[in-house]
Length: 395
Ligand SMILES: Nc1nc2c(c(=O)[nH]1)N[C@H]1C(S)=C(S)[C@@H](COP(=O)(O)O)O[C@H]1N2
Ligand SMILES: [Mo]
Image (cartoon, rainbow, N blue to C red; front, side):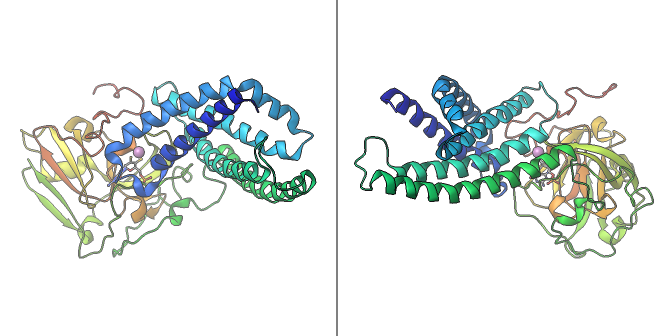
């Protein structure tokens, strides 16, 4: 490897390391709350690093292609070839995510998943690559081993690591492919039951006929169970639901009362602003307009503020948005009580807006006169979060 190539190669490696770090911080669910204030910065840094990586990758193209060309006949080169292919895959899937952020494509679920699997594979392959290069010695080093011993050791080492990475890579690839082809898998039982549920509420909400079996046929895709706090657990003692602020009659429901209120069933899609969606979710709950009418909205009220039982997360809608017929306080998903991981026992659902508006562990609704800036809106997201880019007609 000549000096220039080696420098380019090391730059590529350094950028990759920073990409893995920033990407890991963006991904790790447990860091969502801790790093919330830095999220936009992290995202921009990650995107710029991705651009730099793409530039370096393309600039190193002749050298990289050599690896690919010689891969066929040489075991050691396979690793590099795999590494190159995952880097190319990361560039494509990452680029697609950037297009989503620019609003040029409407959803990026599959690419988003692919990016995560490829990143995991890429990190693994890079570690193997580093160890392998180290054990092999850099060209020009004073190798202690004879060339034969060296290549012998190299070969058995690379075989073990390659087998491992190919196995892992194939597993990840297959999983992604399955996801791509049939979102949600073909399990007859939708995945609601797979999420953790620490709620202990009696009686449970009994599903309506359109909920069980779910009118939407079971949701397609996978919820990621986001939270910026510890996940709260509800009991009959600690849970209640209040409607307060500028209303004629403030209401405070115990669970036993709340679970008896009339509910409706709807099928709607769920879009996270970060580019993943879950389709055809069957929600059963109380239309928000029904709750607002029960409390009686005073003349001065213009906005509705939503309060989470996590004590931190809030969001808001204008009164007109809140009265959209598909805005509901959902209590069941696909015929099952919403598990605590997905925001149960009661979660706001605003299907036409990005899901950061859909406050999980909803315990309160407050009618207010002045706008309220919600959790993610304080951190840069727009208050009007129409997933289609524009409000529905008449709003
Ligand atoms: N209380 C609370 N509600 C929340 C969030 C949160 O962190 N806390 N995240 C929002 C975001 S950004 C998304 S994408 C969805 C995720 O819903 P899920 O965890 O059911 O997949 O919840 C929304 N509501
Ligand atoms: Mo989200």
